[in-house]
Image (tube, rainbow, N blue to C red):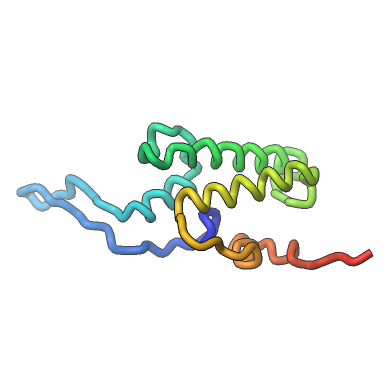
Length: 128
């Protein structure tokens, strides 16, 4: 699963701690869900990230910077094809690195990542 996916499912239900009056005092969520929340909300401040995942804030910051640069010149829409080949590579690399940092394990095929991001059209191979 890609960190940029629109999946809103929690990996497990949050746990609520209540005070003696029954008011919520703390909410505990799974680490995976917290990390997804940081990405979805574009939290770029490393201090808001768990220490061992702070590089994720730097990667996400660069991803969002690239997206904003395209959107500012494309009527607010992100279009991967408007990126230079070098920036496309940097963008792909940052997404892959962020996925590996947050969800280590076997690599996810690019086809699945692109489908999750709604970028299936990039799977088309152009022949000359």
